[in-house]
Image (cartoon, rainbow, N blue to C red):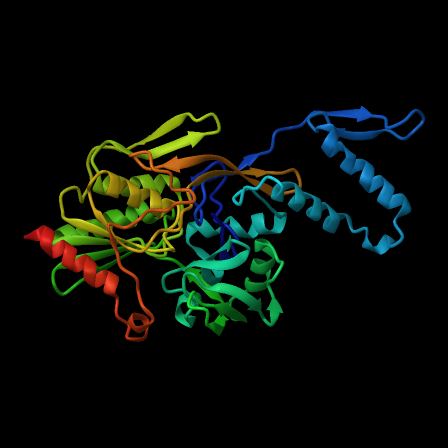
Length: 408
């Protein structure tokens, strides 16, 4: 499938040190890289010794030799930029793995992104992904400048400020889009319909309210979780208390365009709707399954509910939706979800940069693999261009219809 980033002043969601998260569709655990033993190696008798990692196989140790030869012999010495060549070597090494979620994050990105999961940052407010070679919008954040400017899930970013994104990696595109509050960026996108649209977005401070309640006229409560932040557990608990106090006939849990977030708050959210049992499993490199257990209790265990999902529902939102679907607690309505089900750890490196490495996969309680597949709704409802023009939410309308049959 794809690798997801936040296009704000955090290119990915990084929690505080040692926390675990579904950041924009990822599981992150920020830890220090292990101290690697080093050993002196001589290339030839009489040559200058060099320091390489004892853990490096010979096939990688030749990189040191290549650099030495280039430094001595290459005709264009100005092209020997260690930072640029080092990044190229790292990118090539990781690309050869063939895993779209294992990636290298530069030190500056690590530094500025660590505030993101706390719910306040600057930028345009959208999640993006590298999907089959195209930089694609996974979801605009609720109420963000990107959403207000008309950026949609599924839009492919073709140009940024007139510069083509062809051949760029995810971080390069993000660096063009991100910027301080009060500045604007012009983005040329290609819609899923094939149409090209130029969108001007004014960057701003993004303050995310992760849980939003909308009491509908027919007595149903639409509970929208925009993403799973440090505040989501408390916010959801407060919202569900309001739902109970207002005697709502049912809950429409809206996880559309929710790119993920913290694992702990994802499981905490599941606890509000499911009593005991499992939220799913983590499968490691050896095929071992580690269950994600749920507590007993919750504010919304019996009230009828349905769940709205779409292509912007990724990772944490997929884990929650999959648990509710597998456990028979709620029907899913909307379109196929994103399909981000890999477990990733963020390992901090000695220069402040980090390696984002895939260490496992997530499964639903029934053992379904989310990664590369996503979740298929029980009721597939596509939003048409006409729906969008007329500001008609046919998915929400179908959710109300399904709930009405459950309430009879």
